[in-house]
Length: 210
Image 1 (tube, one colour):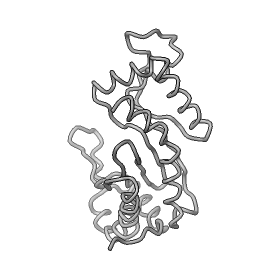
Image 2: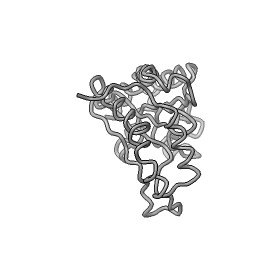
Image 3: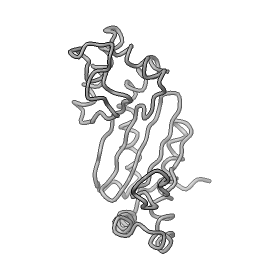
Image 4: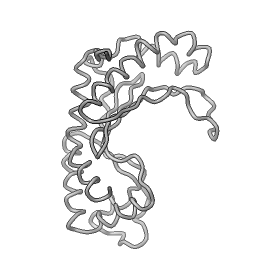
């Protein structure tokens, strides 16, 4: 039976503060029990509980891929995971400064990106997306995703949805920071709230991008 999610204890924040100060195998090994019980354990329990509603999930490994990076720090200073399929669910990450929850698309194939921009440019499909994005931003969310500095070739620079055309991928997110409810089961409700508010965006992407 899966362990019930009850939030993250204070040791979680202290672990990440220490890891930021000493990002080494020696530190990680010395605090591995705290990591497993206060950091990873609650995240696994949360993702498993979300899988029931949203679909398969995953908790990411703590090790960084340093093969092509100038930064050779061996460990990520957060813990992250996701749950969802078929355009539902999303992503979350926790570090020493708090919780961030997101939903949308974190990567698009070249074919999907071409389709995305055609749908954004067309009034019949692009205007509804602009309304969706405006609504979630009024509700306190931020829109993320790598974007070009200029509208890509093929569309006018003064296109009414120029901002959305510049995106190479798109998602919404909320940075909650440190909140008292992070130490309780109520943190799950906050994750579900973000993913619920993101459903119109996920639905649009599923219909128009695939």
